[in-house]
Length: 317
Image (tube, rainbow, N blue to C red; front, side, top):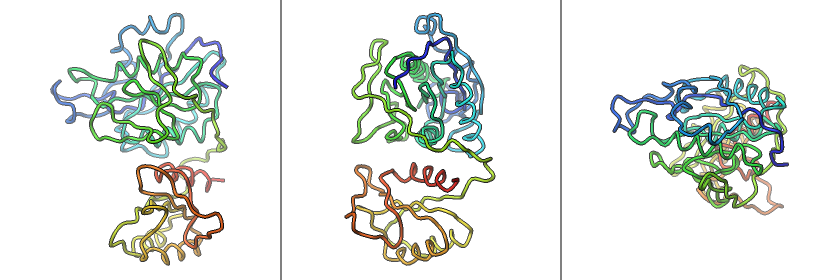
């Protein structure tokens, strides 16, 4: 069901990222330090907020200040609990999260799997630091506020460069371009144009089945391996020997792995390691005959990075 709550507040949770970054020189868009500004300072740079919000109040809370490449389980755990808390308040219509771009797609999928809440959760980021001559963060925040107030918003979304993405499909597709995110073949959900959202397809509702979150020290260890030419079985065996509990293999093509890995993955499963098979291809998903049994893993339609999160949550059960 789309967002139908009476909105009195929008909560903004800060986690740092480029949107809160600063460089020594305004023309430097890559040599900066992420997470330097507070979320309150980041919001102060956005012009016309009162025109967008009207009587709706903004509440700010700092969860972390880091470069999102360093995102860890403790911050994810805290973030999920704070999203659940604020979204559970009857007067909160949306939760925004300022986030770095590098792992935004992973955090979005984690929250989509752990936070079945009654309002949209929107991740907003930037490719240029706040100190840039023309930062993109303030416009992205304005757009995110517009999406937050729109009746069609639901689930976990990402807003960047005027586009609205679903957590299931969003991924960073370019290392430095302002329009860095893509939803691949699925396409974006819509665009923010002239202060309104033009939906191309409906935002999906929450499908979370992982409401019980143990403390981060109890989270299972799941790694991603990419099958490639000249792959050696020792890479799989070493992880198993070290105690890994789950492996997601970004396979070549339609779910194939190097011959060196096949028996290594069979050995891993025999020792209790859960193995999921994805594809390293940018588009599409693994399609295998239903009757075909795989000795070395279970096929998934998720991209490898998101499959890792889902497998980790499954193992928590």
